[in-house]
Image (cartoon, rainbow, N blue to C red):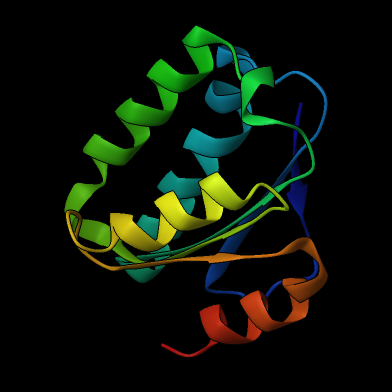
Length: 121
């Protein structure tokens, strides 16, 4: 399940993933949020808090995630992934080398640091 994180700076769209995450979650939460953000700011500052293992994302969710990334490929400015899964954190850090924008992984205990990092344009 994806839920919107409401206490972020206005130019940051944040979601929290818990339990199983499906394609419908991405279609009804992530994609509309990214659309609003790009229409209003013409760039994406994104916060993903993973409180569920990545194995809980369905194949359809991964497909929708890929669509979201490609649709807004040039709009990504900063993305923070907050998780206690070290492999995901390292992958996020490495993603900055192949995609536009900055991508950074944070531990769950560093959520406030992630929001501060995203806050800086």
